[in-house]
Image 1 (cartoon, rainbow, N blue to C red):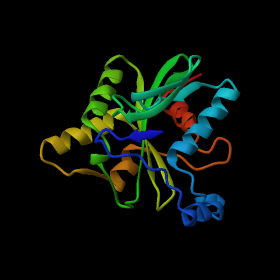
Image 2: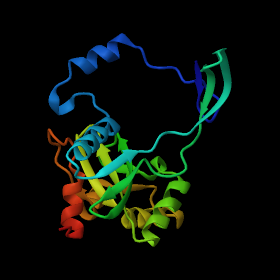
Image 3: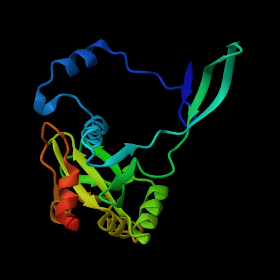
Image 4: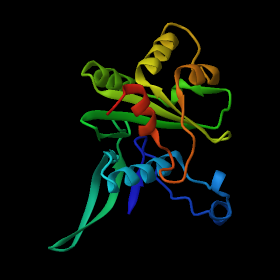
Length: 202
């Protein structure tokens, strides 16, 4: 089956044996897990213990070629990944709507705003206007540091860029306005603990 990105380029899975070997031999502190994988594990932990229901939104796919070898079965032969229109995750926690985006960077001194898209910024602004809880989780991969930054701060940095200011958020600004999330075991990224302290949930 063929999958294509929105620009038409074919998606090719990474089967490099050297990469796979490196992932298997990595240590716990840098075990090769992506931010998405760590968050999915954390959300599974929350769900299984009935703490919260938060899921990653599926990436929209446009199917263009389907084969029907049997009347009761269909085989997708070719499809395209569509660009997501909102953020990565949403759900409910203690009666509150939760909505957030997750991004990571190899830079250690700043976080590029180009990692976000205009439609995501508009979506987050809309969530805030309806009193939803909206934020971004940012990971500095080389430092193994994770931060929760509330969406209102991200919107301010985005507006600064639109006004001709810097095109990134400095790490110092993230440390000042954001909230460091220590990496744990279960859950790996306990971001709900930060929300408890910010919103004084009972």
